[in-house]
Length: 424
Image 1 (tube, helix red, strand yellow):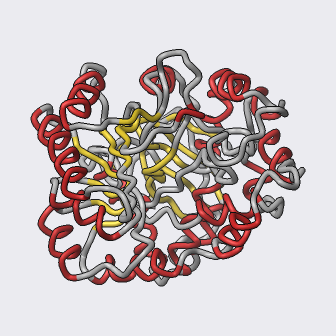
Image 2 (cartoon, rainbow, N blue to C red):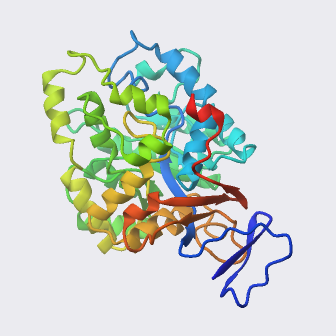
């Protein structure tokens, strides 16, 4: 087979005997290799580095690295982060919530060849306060909304920036929270975002708020439900809403390994991740006493994927719910770029076939970012976001990390060649 790319799009795909290659064309010899669409990671956060200092609300290491310094470094090295995604064959990412400077990240990526296509949400509309992530600059990543009116006002501020998504952080405590009142807040946000032609994404890891989010017309659930099995009501609501479901299986375990000083890089993370982040995580910088004994016990239980979250992957699959691949990269221990390989392996371990993981990572991801006609397939007319693999991705999901070349909009990248900033 030959894939002919002209400009930023695929011009032809077919048997080599029938595809005419223009004189002077750049040729990539892919004999014995496989060509797949570019990967879409549907859940990342650019305001987080993946390193141990990036969430002082989880573990406070600000005496070692002040949070303002951490955020400044993240913003300074965005090109390094972009390059890690491209090196892993991830040609599109969805940033599912961060400060208003997320919109600057999207603009910067659009002007950078060696960067994925970036789709963003603004600050998370949250049911709870998270003051430790507020630098006092007037641009926190998470903003508490107590009423529908506050939520709608914040959503409208974001809509002025033309976000790709609006996101609600639906944190529900059954001992003290009013689920009906919270559902009303989500519904008010859904109404205003849908009126603007924007989809609503919701973080809801418990079954009750997840169903409330669906009743309130959420379009996307950014995590797997992890406290109970998906029930008939959830499945009916998800089908009715044509909801997109992103499991994010690896993130809890990555936190646990990091906070227990047991994080070790995979081969892909060592080769393709940010070297400083890898070094900081492997150094085991969390001091004794920074994590309470009670928290340590909870972290031990999270070293393996959460059972309900895993089983719900199969329940969602069997119910015909559309799933995507999302890592929640940027959280402690979940690296920008190579974490996608670990997430795909976790989805396969949960019971999905390699073909199902491929579809989740490509065609379903293209639908998630609103680009199903442009991305997600190796076909004439599509944007030339492609990955050339050295091994068959349908034989094993592990073969997705065997990347030979990456194309983004027709630009060709060798994953072994990294920009200088990526090796500082």
